[in-house]
Each structure stands twice: as C-alpha cells, then as structure tokens.
Image (cartoon, rainbow, N blue to C red; front, side):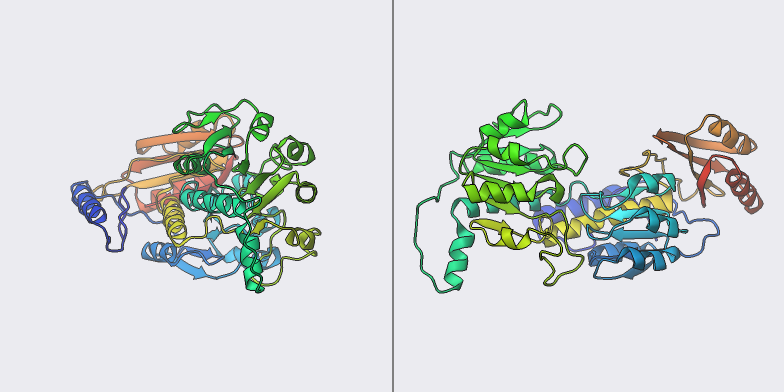
Length: 455
C-alpha cells in the first residue's frame, strides 16, 4: 500500500474538469519523492469497527490500507459496545452511537475514534483524550447538503407545502393563498455563521432574501449579509430564523419562551443544528398561539437508535402533540444525508484515521493537540517514528530525549492541549533491539499514556 499527501478519487471523473484535475494531480504526485509506508511495531493487524451504515467508500479506503474492517448498518447500544469494543483498535460512528466513559474504559485496545459527521457530542471527548484517543470528524463535507435542505424548508414553510401535500394524500383539494408567501424580499436570520451558515447565506441571497446573522465572534460576511450584535436583535428583525450552532452548555435551550416572544409574529423557526438547543414545549406553545407560523425540525433532544416506528411519546413526551400541529416539517436528522455528503464524509474521516494509525498525524483531531511530521522518504532505511501521548507535565521531554540521546533525532514536534500532550519524533539508524528498548523505556515513564512506534 502507498500513501500520498494528495488524495485522488478512485472513481473515473465524469466531467471535463474532473478529468483535468485527476490528470494534473497524477502528474504532480508522480514527481514527488515517494513516502515510506509505516506500520505499527509488533502490534499485529489493526482491526476497525464501523457502525451506522458508514459509506462503502470509507470501507474501501480502510481495507486498501490493510486494515481489517467490520461493518454494521446500525448503531450499537452501550452494553453492546462494552461487550465487543475491546477487540478493536479504531471505531467509526455517526450520530446515534454513544461513546461514553464506560465504553472507553472497556476499549482496552482503542487508538482512535472517527465521527463520520460534523458533531462530536456523542463522544466523551475529555475521557477519550485522557485515554490517549484522538477523535476525528468531518466539519465541512456535508455543509452544502444541510444548506440546501434549509432552503427547501424555507420555501416549503412559506407555501405550506407539507399541509397541502398531506391534504391531497387524503383526497382533499384545498387551493388557498392566505398565509402563503414568496421568500423574495424576506429576511433570513442565521444563528451561527460557520461553514453551513455562510453557504446558506449565499444561497438565500440568490433567492432575493435579505440576510442577517449572529455569531459569538466577528466574521466577515459573504455577499450583502450583515452581522448583528445580539441574538435578540436578529430575532426581532427576521422572518425566518435558522440555527447552526454546536451543542454546548451555552447553546442548550437557547431558543425558549423569551426568545420566541422576541421573534416577529408569524415568523418561522428552522433547526438543523442540535436537538437540545430548542425548548420544544415552548416551541409548541408559540406555534399554537400563532406567534410562529411554522417550524422545520430535523434534530430532536432524544432520537431513535434505529429506523422504524420509534418516534413516540416514550422517546419524547411531546411527540404526538408536535406531530399534530399544522405547518410543521419534521425530518429524521437527514441534514447531511445525501449521497454526495456521505461519500465525502467517508473519504475525509477514513483518511484522517489512516493518517493517525499509519503515520501518527493528529491534524484535524477535535480533542487532541494537532501534531504532524514530514513523511519519511521510501529510501530512508532504519527509521522509526515515535508517537508518544503523555500527561502534560514538566520534565517529560527531557526524559524522552534522554532515552533517544544515543540516536540521531531527525525531526521532532510536540504540542499540548489541556491535560494531554503529544510528541512525535523520527529517529534514524535504529536496530530491532533498539526499538524494543526505546518502547519499553518510554512506556515506563511516569507520564506515559500511549506510546506507539511506527517503522
């Protein structure tokens, strides 16, 4: 197997631009000095677990790298994970599988976690970091899919399309225009102007909408969008409010009774972010009173672990009441569920897992210091890469450098994040006996969490 810094799609491109790009990249990478493929020293075959119907493209990437991959279409419960995760070196999940502290304690071989989605709140990130386990996600790949869904929801709400569709399915012809609006000239308020919010901003302006946004940091707007100084200011001046924020203590319940009262009468709420950022009972009251004219909800505080008739009052006590309301769009967390997004997510996260398992790179990890080293060239013999995860304590680098002192350290990089630090070092002219000695001595240091040697 081989590894290049530039990833080329294995499929034949169908457009002239794609063909040109592939030929250009191929000619470029062929001129680069090939890198050496590294393998863990004395660890045996690495075994990966992929849950929740992760794309076959990701499976292929990982298998092509020589990993053993076990793939399952559904999420696993905490009990299932505790029973089985001990045999795996890496796990890939989407949003339904929960990697809790109990699961991590049972994951005695686990080296890394891949979240094949944007969010990572389904993983206990702090406990994972303390166990020396970096967590990777895909922060960009489904942004367009979510933005397009929001546009569809805006139009559907403004024209009451779900109600008219349901009536037609029941044989009712109900041609009305009252309460139905064009979106041109209306104001869209975006809460969270990140990858999704900024793309949505451009799409909305193409429909003739005016765009306001609120974010906790100052961001340069795209097009004619304008940042406002507070959430209240956005709520008071928007016809549609759409949420694109992570689930944090600061965002949990950020849309409640007071916020709905601030919104324009007859406006609309759209939530494709995280289920807990909206107080659903308060939303129901706002819809019943007519304060809001409609809402689109793609995420919920509690979501079923599998497809089927599971979205009920046992899961969320208000489910039946919400379903009964007019002009409500409810979708089963499908914001990023497009073929294009899932393929891109699969490639991005699979490559991140490969880079860490084979090369030690933590670039892109959400809970870990980001450390990387220049690749070892294929013609550089007897090189070993030390990947040392340790507690962020004084004196660790001195200890490690004393262990490596009799060898030529070609390159070294260390960084820390909170209580965790990560050191990578490439050392030359190392014999098999030296490898055993280096690993054992570093493992015995007081601050050691996980030490891997790649050669």
